[in-house]
Length: 212
Image 1: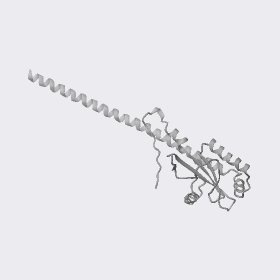
Image 2: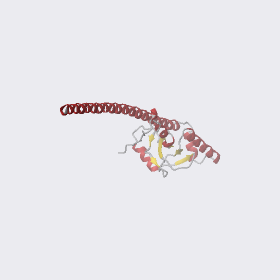
Image 3: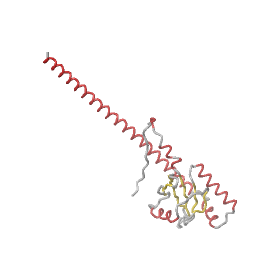
Image 4: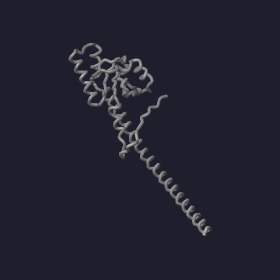
């Protein structure tokens, strides 16, 4: 009887080991499949968000190009620089810049003269120093028509991203000024990036910028 008990316990122990091994193997297979599925979902989500960010950036650059090509800008600059714009005209131009910023979701639109000094803006706020703007333009590759300036963070911790477009001068002449479009990505692109496909409750996107 004792020998039979030992045999039974041995068989039971072996069966238990086989069951445990099967469970471990099953869990490993399921974990691998889950990792593969989640990895594929993350890859798709990352590609989607990267495409959204790229599209947003291109739209902003196209806005700057379109604004810089407005035919009346040379006359506007000349009238402001020469003091030919009276107070009514000055207010009209300010309202125009303010309306443009509101319609296209910019924080500010700033018209700069040839020295990159602000001449007109639709609202208050801070503008990067002219020296830093000039340095950024000098460092830009030849033929650059729109420059994306390094991101900034204000005192409230709000991210800012500015787009600078030189205004071409007459043939053979240097730039007569520039247009500066100042945006707050936290109000436009970041809310869109925070929306996950498939209703993911725990995932989040982190936006990094390469420096150096």
